[in-house]
Length: 388
Image 1: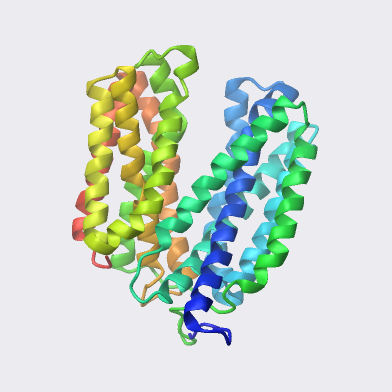
Image 2: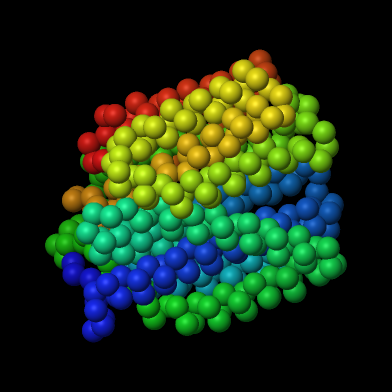
């Protein structure tokens, strides 16, 4: 299906669309980081133990899983722009609910809605990004969009730290964030793509993913196992294995997040020279190498270097996989992205508990060695993938 192009010159149209979609990558990143920055406050207010908090937070993936197929269906029916606008309304309402909820019984449904709306926005905005990337005629720009999301995480965390330091309760903090999103969203929503690309009018909505899409899903699955391990266990690894001083326990996570964000801004340029397949192959090797450095030499400096390597390694994989999935010939972009995201998301869920189980039977170093194998699997899967 053709894209809706405004009357001004094509080069300017591309820039306008790109800026608008970049804005809509920033907004959900800001929402997620705002919530994450206030989890300790909510834990204290509710009186949750670490175990209870972990169980309550499972409500987010419980909302995310059903939203993946639903978002693909809705995008195929209504388009990514309408789906994105619906998603941001749900996301903002859920955020306000999380700031207001006085009891666990009210907090949990808000978390479910938060997870549901987050993936609704995720699939919709990536579908928009696929359409904008097609306007650049072979140039890779997807990773830079994901870099914007990562940057929003730093901004949201900084705002949350400031609000906490000033004693501002989450509800007022979140009202400020929602007000900002309402203003920015109102000005930028009219510049989103009106129609999605790579969509045939006679294409069925539900199609079983073909071999190429399953191959992309396998790459995402392995990469997101690595990401999940870094998100949830980096602090524990630095505390128990690296035995970092108290102020440095979070340094591994910060190092990983910093290079992941930085890597995404450079990944498009590098992919244009190496090609998507070789870029993902090298990314898997770098991820495995970084984990093995952290496992083999668990000192503060070497572990930081290893975690930085992992951040660079995983930075480009998911954006490149999404870009390739959005060009599927058998499924609409939204459904293709939803299919690949579902497979990848399972890896994100499986990775952290798998580390815990293996660490309980052996050690954290053994667990991280197994995650390094997942990095090698990314390289292997990219070698065999047909759609790259």
